Length: 422
Image (cartoon, rainbow, N blue to C red):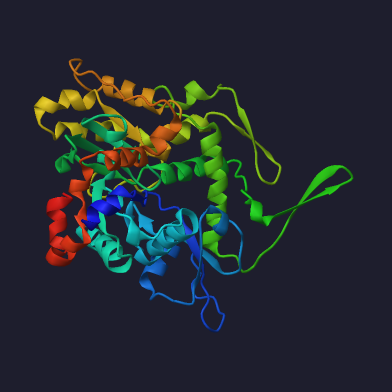
C-alpha cells in the first residue's frame, strides 16, 4: 500500500529538541514602528505567544541568520522546557529545514517524530494535523525521545538521563516503553548552567565585569596592531543583546568548564590552575574555580539564586532525580536500571559529569546495586543519541508495520494515536 511504498523510499526524522534554539523576527507593523520591545529572551517569547500572528513579519532561522544584527529584531524560542509553545515558529523551522536543506517533499516520505516524554496530548494532536493535513505525509510514527536514546546504545532496559538546553529529565525505559510514573524533569539544564556561569564570572560583587558581545565591536588594524572600538545601535532589542551575550557565555562553558570530582568546596578549589579566555573585546579573562563551580548547579543547586521547580518536583540534584525515578519502578527491575544509565543531550558531554554521577549514586544507594553509565565512543553519540536511535528504529525490517497511515488518520482521527503511538 501507499504506506509501505513510502517507507521503502526512505524516512524523514524530526526532533524539535528541548532547547529550542531560536529564530526570529523583524517585529515591525505596517507603519514601520517597533511592535514589541522585550526585556529578555523569555519576555520576547511570552509577548509573541500572546500576540496575533503578523503575516508581514519576517523570520530569520538558524544560527547564521539570527546572529546578524538587524534593527528591531527580537529573538524568540518556540520551545519552553522541552515542549513546543509556538507552533507557527516550529512550522516555519520545519519548512526551512525541509525545503532549504533537505530538499524533500513530505508527500513522498513517512515521518518519524521524536517527542518528549512529557509531550501534552494537544501537542500530539497538532503534530498530526501538520503532518497529514498540511504536508500530506503518507504516514507517521511518534516515539519518545528517551526510548530512542536507549535504542542508540542497544539497551531495552535503561534509565535515560537527558540533559538538554531547557530541561533535564530522568526517564525509566523498559522493553521500548516509558514507565511514566518514574519520569522526573527540571529546568536545571544547559541554559541555567549558562546563567550560573554568567553570575560567577561577570557579576562578582567586588569586581563586576562588563560582557561586550561581538556585534558591538568595531575592529581595525592600525600601525600593525588591532584596535577595538565600541559601536552603538539604538534600535537593537534587549532580547537580541541578551542572546548574543549568552553566546559568549556558552562558548566559555563548552571550552573550559568541567564537573568537580566531588561536592564543590571553594576552599578546596581556590588554588586550581587558572585558565585564560580571550573575550570578544580582547580582554583576557582568568578563570579558576568558576569552571568547576558553575556545573555544580546540576548537583547542588541551592547555592544559586535561580528558580528550581517545574512540573511539581523539587530539584535536589541529578543523582537524587535518578534515585527517585528508579525507586518508583518495580523492585525487580531496579538493579537493571541502576546498571544501565544512559546519558544524552548536549549538556551531558561536560567533562567529568558521568564519573561524578556514578560516584554520588554509589554513596547514596545500597552496595548491592551496581551503578554504571553506558559508555559512548564519541561526544556526538551523546549529543545525537535520539537521532541515532531513530535511524536504528526506522531501519528495522518490521518497522513499516507500525506506521500510522494518512488513510487510518482520516478514518479514525487522532484517537487512533493513543493506540498506535502510546
